[in-house]
Image (cartoon, rainbow, N blue to C red; front, side):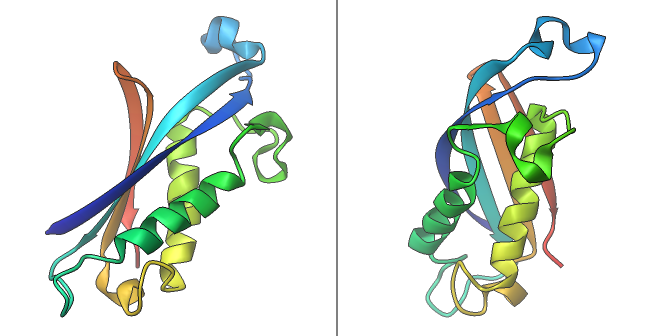
Length: 134
């Protein structure tokens, strides 16, 4: 399996519901390092997994809707505990939609098989979501 990864970061604010979250029930901030890995079984005729420039552009576009936001106020996320794990899945879903539109290069929607999103809270803690694209 071949893979290509791009990364960026977002700064967010959010709070959680539930005693399990202790002081994180209060509004607090986080800066996430975000990595997205595109995978496919065979390289294309140019020796690529996908267009790295387009992949980075799409990631930036997806993250722009979340960057510098209070996630508690983002309509699609209201009422959700936007944990690092949850947000990895949310970013995966948004990237999957863009891949389906061939946004990371012509023919990639059919060729790419899986996508992995990693959110790094710190060098010591991170979460990920990985799944098929079809």
